[in-house]
Amino acid sequence: MEKKILVVDDENPIRHLFQTALRQKGYDVDSAESAEIALNLIEKNQYHLYLLDLNLPGMSGIDLCRIIKEMQPDA
Image (spheres, rainbow, N blue to C red):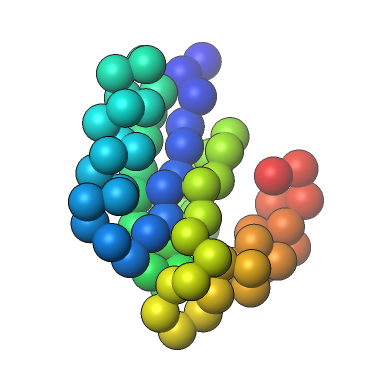
């Protein structure tokens, strides 16, 4: 099974860099520019790894991490 990764960062160049590098290594990568968008993706998908920016606009990466752990305790 292909490993699925979610990259969450409000800076497009950083998201693009991670997406490109991880896809070249064979991973299935989704990205989100905010915690809110990330939560919508998490409701629809199961991810093996989350790469979160700590300083997101609105909800912080720390708060998002807490919610992810509630939604998916094995994350």
